[in-house]
Length: 458
Image 1 (tube, rainbow, N blue to C red):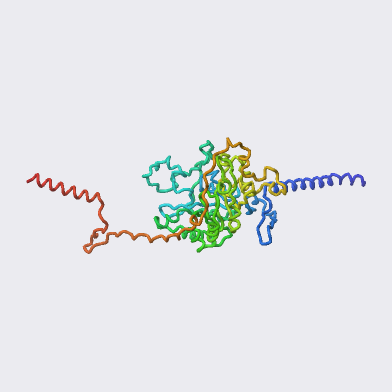
Image 2: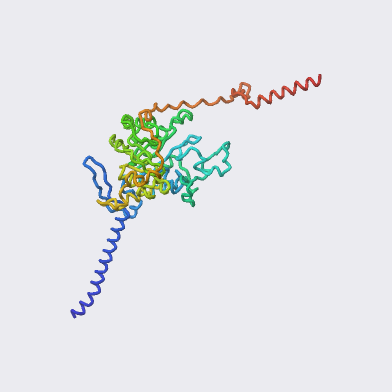
């Protein structure tokens, strides 16, 4: 009888063991999947040193969309994911969020009716399909920007490289207010608003762009949110005004290549900015796509407690010096590990996020392909007869390049033109506006006809 009972229990025991083994396999698979998909725990700089924050495994269905690490390098979009969709369109911004950008950006431009919009260029001929529309003539008036489709940028079109041809005209432009509302509920560290031509807007267009941007941010709820607001501008006068009125993080963009910076100029930047945006050539100068050295600017800026962001990273191999082996990941790794930048500004946020999630970054001894390249790597292997020509000397940043007079206050709007008012006799009094030239010519013509007719009758 006991043998029969043991025989009946045997299948149950085996089923139980098989179920536990299956659960173990699935649990191990999930742990491996999470380790390969999600980035290492972030490091935060504190007075006690770098602290690694352990992330709890909660809310699993949404973890793939969450930006779990805001550590370095910071991934800042350039006109959204402009390598995938047209600049500053809703689809470009959504793609940047989906690809894991830490910060999405908006380059503000002013429309005729005084509305701030996100656009990479004020010239519609370069960013829309207006040249293929009835409004291609510069004499035409375009009543609405939406009447022309967006146009994806093609920086490497000379080499026959086209970006996302299927969606080259997809997406709609966004107002600044729409952009701010879009970013408010996304898993982001913050937003970056880029401002140029503020002096022209104040003097010629009578528009205060600083006050308008602050008002848009407050109306969108950014005065009561954890999202960080970053303001970028190549004009120190703009950043100084923002520093007086807000607590935003201010980024001074140096929109030309420099080889070094005077200590006095760095001290001046420190008074109105928290970070500096440099071009790639200002860190690793190149000649005919060969790296010629390293400028050493970043240690000086870090010594002044300034973060350094580098622009512009692209995926096209023709945009990368040969030293980086035509690999966008090698290029990012060299600027981050080799030069020590704090963030990258890129057309392809997904490439930056993939680098931050790379598990080889956690290794104490990373493989060779994750090591930064050495400056003059290829030039040192070339004979003098085939080396590229020597570069022209790059300028040095001085105090005169940084300091600017205060941003002018926009003059008050002109008074409205006088209108006709009712006269005492019930009619309309004549307008005080001068008559047009056509009316003057017609009056003279009528008088001439009367004079000629008088002489004919006489």
